Image (spheres, rainbow, N blue to C red):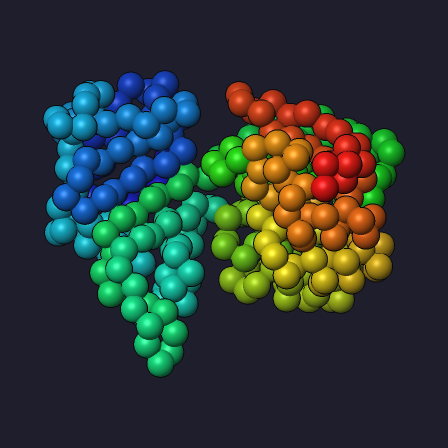
Length: 292
């Protein structure tokens, strides 16, 4: 597990001591200053002790200032300054699609928002499940609909699903050209006909990919307000968009103004709703539009 080298020694020992079946299910590791170290695995928040035995918050391994600073130095390769732009947006990009979210005390400076003190780090572990999006890509390869809206709650597997969709579309006996607008450096792929732009706003990456790389599919994560205009423009070039949005239901997703605009603009013809245990249900996009 390549992400384990980021862990300071006490946490590496705790994670290494966890039962193997739990360690394989880890999706997040949370470090909160002077509070218990917690691990999210199998949909549960767990509290390991110094030897990796599951316990309660009172007896769990705790996070000191020195340990949190050591973790941040490992995550930034010893240079917080090199990551200050990303950190101002609340994250540190890591290798192989992993990411560390950060929280703490911020201040406004002439150069913008900066963290005065970081008190929480959430190390999010990327997972590559190549077959996760197979039910969707089989439909795409047979009927070639316009685009797909992927819906799930936070930490519900959207990025893992998009990574699978990109891989399945960009590989195989009939691969497609796939452009990835990867604003937060999470959609790392090991193979395939993929062109990826990282570290810039999605709308700009979409514009650049559409104009310069002629993708057949364009993939981006977590749609937000104001991003519908460049995505509608990309639709006019014929590229098919696969994009995700936070939502626990079709109804909740339909309330978002950017989603409604894209649906009304004909960008999406299918919606993929992610369920527990890596299941996916696929609906016509009209069912989402009916809720808006």
